[in-house]
Length: 315
Image (cartoon, rainbow, N blue to C red; front, side):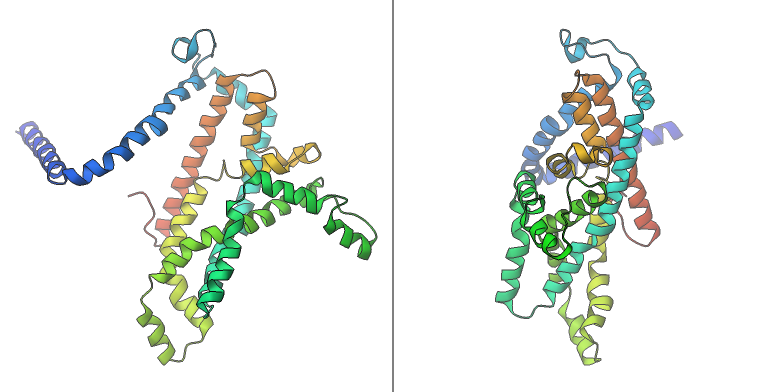
């Protein structure tokens, strides 16, 4: 009887689902192009991840290349450069979260306090513009300004009598990454928080004004608590990208002098794939490992957000 009840319950669920889909068929029709796009360009290429468990031979192609199980991962974890690249990636990108993640929040709070609409739009346009520059352009600007013969060193030499090799010095390279990341992306991400701020009920501010609250009290007791769900979502998404963020930046800014601290996991994959004898099975294995780490970071961040009273992303 229990098995019959389960079958009836299952069939009723399927029937209800199909009925809901037919009832909302126009909405599903609008979703169809997006679903097709994701199926072809996002999920389809995942077939290539099988290379992580194969010995790739170009003459045989992906499908006919022989399976080798976890042999590629044996070689991956035997490589000291791989282990070093994992720790370097964590060090750089966790520092990136610590120093660059709060910057858009602070900027959005400051922009929200500007009373002149014209001035506010002007400032927002200025701070958002760098986001539209590619890292190739930004790196060219950095190299020009921070080189030994650049204007920054020209000013420093007048006061200190010496030059500072900003991009060729291991002690200054990582801080330069954070500074340029803040300059380039803060204005763009601040738009997200400004949108969240614009949705706050103005009656809360009016009530606080009647109670004599200062502007700082408004920020800490009204604005920040109301945009906290947005902050949590952005933090979870950032944690889900912690093992792969910053490749374009580091690739364009790094040089041989700072290779010991700049070879992140993505740079390691690039070097293994394109700067030595190509081994696509090996590099795919490393890429899959990176994706799994990103997923674990996202799940940990999501769980942490729920433990702290947030909603998280995953049900």
